[in-house]
Length: 166
Image (cartoon, rainbow, N blue to C red; front, top):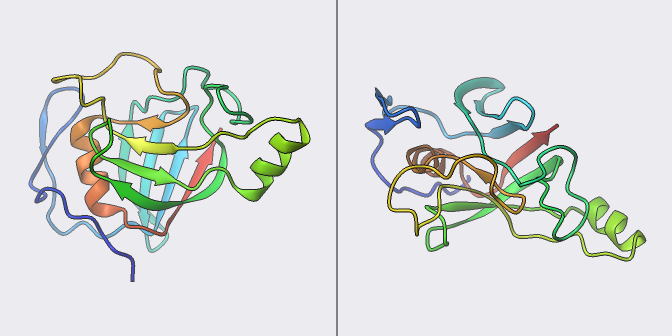
């Protein structure tokens, strides 16, 4: 059984647009996560069915194309795993994505380069007292609002597969 990371009791979610929306307390644990970079959408699935959608994702400074090398500012594309959470990161909660996969490492090494790493799904910078950094600003991570990452944190356990699509 996957371990879920409780953070806050679910009750109200403050959406990035600023309006409060009730969040059902009985949301299931996600068993699959899909990120669509072009649509800037993250969807949680349980039992093969989508049940929660988050939009307005923020990506790396170079959002088009897959991550190939350290420092390319791109967000990876492919199948990975959410393998651990960090509640003490420089961002409001972060979930580590298992990039690079062996194929990513092989490609980068074949070019004499490093594939990079430390790719996370996370909230906004802790140094930002409130609000949201505008535009794409990460070094290849996937950023959401702080309220959204709190909900995602509570629903996505270690070992959950994540597919990042173009």
